[in-house]
Image (cartoon, rainbow, N blue to C red; front, side):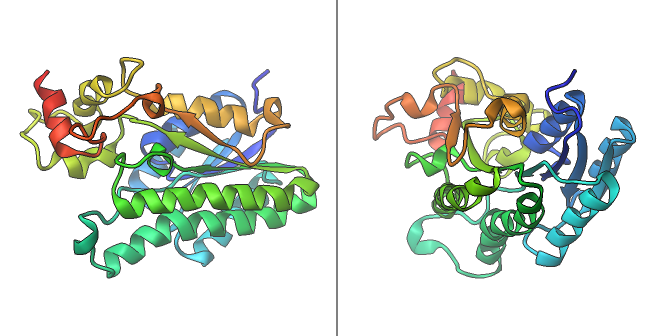
Length: 280
């Protein structure tokens, strides 16, 4: 018996990184899954590989019509919705605060990582309130908890995701619907690719491979995080093992937020720190 037998889940950003790892874990635990992403080729490939209990839906989470369509697909194909994992995201607009342009890149950052989470909660709640059950999970970040671990706008958005999670959790608790956030630490995924563009070539190694020793050097537990580390927490939050857990933001960070960063070392988003870690 899997921990998610009989459950139906949607995972946004499910075609790569944390999302892909979580899709595979959910299926392994017995769930039926809708992969929602804009990476059509990767999403369709994963759905084919995992079989009839997985379907891919092209979804731009910043667009309400796309969110409605992914929710409707889950219900029409699988009959219900037990878990929504609002995971889609990227690094977004960055730069020093007095240099950030409030243009298209800024709007896209807000749209995907905050509006997308809010829209997911809105439309999942319509189904889950009727069912009197469900679990909504959102990806926040250690950058929401501690300064210096991510770009300014990204950090602010992720803090907002935690606030939204706590607020919506209180509304939906009366309906048996739980709302929680996961705060990943340094997870070896393609999200770091823009950062590595400014560093020497890694001899055609992929982003995750290049990032593992860098993240290991900045994480107390001594290794980088992997997508499955976040996926296992998502399985717990989606399962009946967590029916008394709501309104929480759970850190899965290898101890990163317990570590004191001296002013001269910065955080994991500091290119100087990453360069020093590569030199070790």
